[in-house]
Image (cartoon, rainbow, N blue to C red; front, side, top):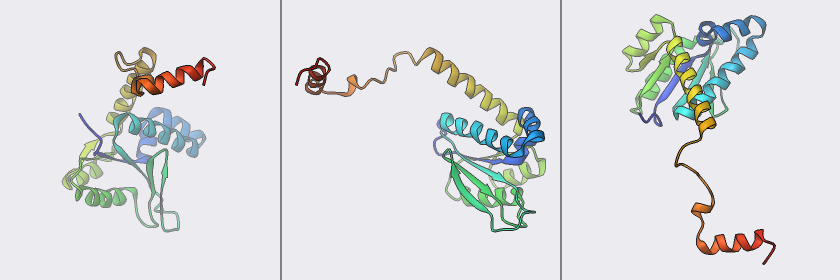
Amino acid sequence: MNRRNDILLVDGYNMIGAWPVLEKLKEIDLEEARDKLLDMLADYQGFSGMMVYVVFDAHQVPGLGATYRHHKLTIVYTKEKETADECIERLVSELMARRRNVFVATSDLVEQHVAFGKGALRLSARELLITIQQNRKQIEHTLREGMPGKRNTLDGNLSLEVRTKLERLRRGGN
């Protein structure tokens, strides 16, 4: 299935609270748990081709909110008095207008129903974690075994003339 135009909206703190490895890490260092989540989602985005937005709830923190890029992910900190759920609902409405598949990853049942009502597809924290773990295994397998018949060598893309010149240079000639 081609996911190149699909979008995944992730409730960041919901994943941290729902994924055992991040839940344990959060008890020691919340920032470290956030970074680990972003690393995992960046790998997933790179492998799946989906555009991933990670929304962090900052509704009790004064300010205008912020959006920035990190590992090609779009990270959104909500505005003051805006919850992650409200931000995700707004993003679903905006992104659905572009006629893409939008997935919302949260284990908040109310948020799942609201997102589904707006046309998004639901993904629980557990389902996303399983998918990420499966992708990780596929990546490791591909790196270990290589892709049969899929060598991406420069030599296969060069003309005979260029290959000949490079071979002469390699041998110390002009």
